[in-house]
Image (cartoon, rainbow over all chains, first blue to last red; front, side, top):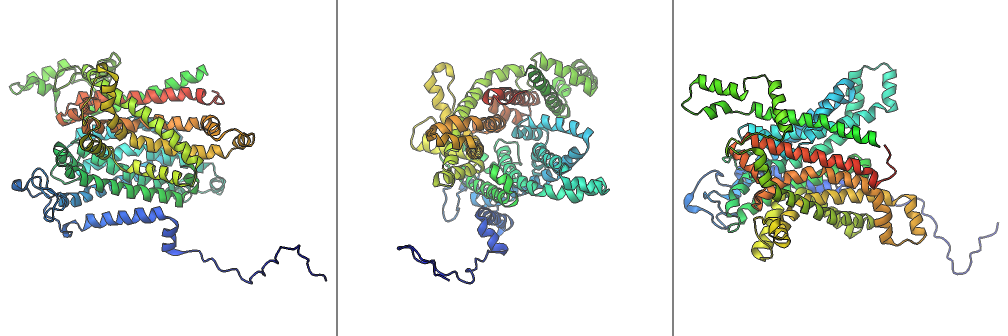
Length: 302
Length: 313
C-alpha cells in the first residue's frame, strides 16, 4: 500500500476529529426568542405596555380627570412629568391611563374580528350558496375605506369604548373573512381532506379537525395586524371627536385636547403620540415575527 | 377582451349596490326624526305626521331606498340638516383641496416607494435593505397625525421653511399651492410609501430569481437596465394592485391630515358633519369616497393588459 504523494505546497488534510464539535441548537423559550428577535423586542415592549395599563394607579400617577384650572398648561417638570393640559390635568397620568383604552380596544377588536371573520370565512368556504351572497356583501363593505366605515358607524351612536370596539370590529371583519375563506378554499383541495371525505368523515368534523387548525396560523398573524390598526383607528376616531367620550383619557382624546395649543405647548400632543407609536410598533413587530415564525411561505412573499 | 371589460364593469354594480344599501340604512336607522326637526317645537303630532307623509318618510324601507337611489343617480345627494345647502354643492366646494392632497401624495409616494423597494431588493440583506424594511415597519406604526405634527413642528415652526397650516387654491399659482401641500402629503404618504415599498421589494425579489434576469446579466446588460427595464416591468402587476388597494388608506388618512393641517377639504367636511350629526353629509361623503375607490380599482383592473401583455382575457 503506497502512501499518497501530495504535490509540493499542499499540506496534508488535518485528520478529522472523531466527533464534530457539537452545535447545540438553542432550544426552549430563550432559543426561540434569540432566533426571532422581532418577537422578543415586540413582546417586551408589549408586556411593558400591559404592565403600564394594569398598574397605572401605582406608577406615581395622580387622578387623570382631576381639574386644576390654576395649574393650566404647566411645562413638564418634577411635579408634572409630562406637564399639565388646558384644564390643569396631569398629562403623565392621563397618558398612562390612556394605555388602558388603547390596549382594550386593540385586543378586543382583534379577538372579536377574528372570531367573526373565522365563522363567516368557514361558512363561506363550505357552503356554496352562502358564499356568493356573503362575498358580495363583504366586497361592498370593503369598498368603504375602513376608517370612514368606522366614522359612519360612530356617527350613529354615542361615544363609548364599547361602541368604538363594535364599529372598528365591523370595519375589520371583511378582510378577515376573505383571508379565512381563501385558506379554506385552498385546503379543501388538499388530498388529506379528500382522504377524510372518502373515509366518511362528517363535514363538521372535517371543518373542526382538519380545516380549522390550519387557519389558525395565518389568522393569528392577521389578528396582530388588526390589533395594531384598531389602536390607530381608535386614536383617529377620538382625535376627530367621534371616539371615546372626552371624560375618558385616551391617547386620541389627549391629542385632540392638545390640538388647539400644539404650536405653543407641543408636549401635550407629543407624549401620547410617542406612546401610541411605540405600542403600535410593538404589535407590528410581534406580527412580523409571528408571520416569519409561523408561515415561512408568507414570510417569503413580504 | 371586450367581453371581459363588460363583465368587469357589470361586476361593480352589485358592489356599489351593497355600498348604497349600507349607506342608506345608516340614515334610516340614524337617531332623530327629520320630520320633527322640520316641524319645530310648536308642532302638533298631526303636523309632524303630515310633514312625514309629505317627505315620504312613512313609506316602507325598500320603497324609500328605491326613491333615494333614484335621487342619487340623478346627482341629488340630499340636503344638509345644518346648512340647508344641497350636499352635492357642499362637496363640490370642498373637493379641490382633497383631490390636490391625494394626487400630490400619490405621485410623491409612488416616485419614492418604488425605487426604494427596487433598491432594497437589489441590495437584499445589506444595510440599505434593512433600512428600507425598518422604515416600512415604522411607517406602518407611526400614525398619520403623529408624522403630521412632527413635520409641522420642525419644518414650519422651528425652521420656518414651509407654511404651518392652510390651503391655497391652485388658481393662485402652482408654487403657493404646492407649498401648502408638501408637509401634508409627506405625512399622509408615509404609510402608503411603507406599503408600496414592501410589496415592490417582495415582488422584485421573486422576479430577480428568474432565468431571464440571469440571461440578461450574462449578456452584459447593465444593472440599472436589468432592475428598471427588465425586472420592474414584470413586477408591475402586484405593485399597481397594491397602489389601488392602498387608496383606501389615503382616503382614511386624508380625514385626519386635513384636521392636522387645517385644510378645508372633504375630510374637514366629514369631521364637522360628525360633530353636528349631519347625516346626509356623512352619507354623501362616504358614498362619494367609496365610489371613487371602486372606480380607481376598476380602472387598474382594466389596465393590467397594458402592464403585462401576457394577460389575456
